[in-house]
Image 1 (cartoon, helix red, strand yellow):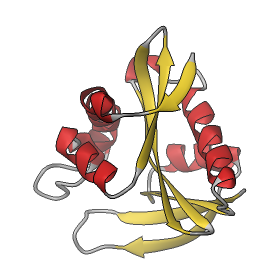
Image 2 (image 1 turned 90 degrees about the horizontal axis):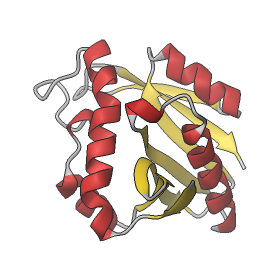
Image 3 (image 1 turned 90 degrees about the vertical axis):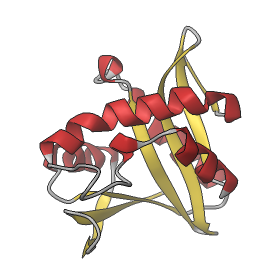
Image 4 (image 1 turned 120 degrees about the vertical axis):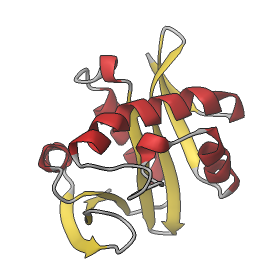
Length: 159
């Protein structure tokens, strides 16, 4: 088991994990291509390359050489980092992988000078919200966006 920086060769694996791990959320909240085409359940390799070009960094979690989880890191400002695209293959959930990837982002952000890690989730996704609260995140605002069918709850973690 290890976490390592992703590279361009990981694009297909990362795209598959992100899309698969977000499909159940899309189904639960009625998200489809028409009402939210940028939802991670529709993630593909082109998104990864676009993120990579913008400077977003991905990390993968491997078990015996197989990529089973990933997370993206983006430094919005010197003191604020974003934890994005946290995804674990459905068959590997509930094994602490998401927690380990999140802790990795905390440490990485700290090494880059960030003091806060921020996330945005579907506001009504209470199970996910509770999971992040257990990790130490606190609510940091709610926002409605006209182009997506749900409110976004922002949360933050002070490193």
